[in-house]
Length: 336
Image (cartoon, rainbow, N blue to C red; front, side, top):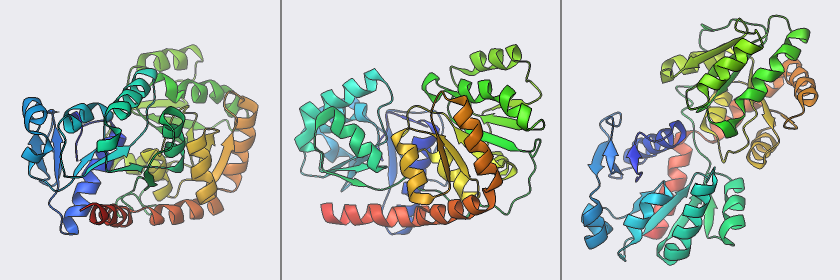
């Protein structure tokens, strides 16, 4: 599993770690390769510090693996520079900004013929790629979730409001966390005890703090910052609805984690969110920037949370990591 640096973002790191662990249980030798490591992978996963010079001069053969599975396009310039008979698999997690899109288009225009297979984490991901580079040879394998770690039967340690809302993400501008905050004063008119947990950190953190203060809703919105996975699962379970106004996703890992904890969804109307809701029937979609539509659909989700919750956990079971790793292994077998 190759990334530029480790850990990568929450979603990338979660996917890479669980694929390594799950595939090793199936008998594969797995490792994480990166140009730099700021921490070690969990559970004694093998780690390999990549050498740019060796990759450019010797190619991927020097790594000693039968398959190279890349998770970030910009490392592919090194992986694909020297032709190899060994298969290279590209895992598409999305291109959320202009630079990433240009990088993906450029990389594919140069090295497309050297990529053996592409895995997209959703049908929406294939649609995104095809808008950039035309028809692709890709197979959909959703991101997975650890259903034995994220499950509903946990203590509600962080239940503060009624209803309790939660959003989990890196706090970037395109995540539009400000929409959720701006909607809170109106939500509080209907639900005076409502409370929103925003889990994560990022460049938007200070702006969001200022917005919360400006709206005078410090009692009703909590910015947790970075927290442990153990605390996160208790926060999921303590909430009533998982909400997101994000304007770019492909297959969001926190959404799957929330579903595994039995949380119904209220997501804005981007294609990947529509795909998840259509596949799972675990919640509703609202029109982005339409606060009235958000509030109306929140009321529907909250009042039907029991049935949506059941659907959420059932869908999560269908994408647990054991199933996802077996699907990935099948692709490996077809490539070797």
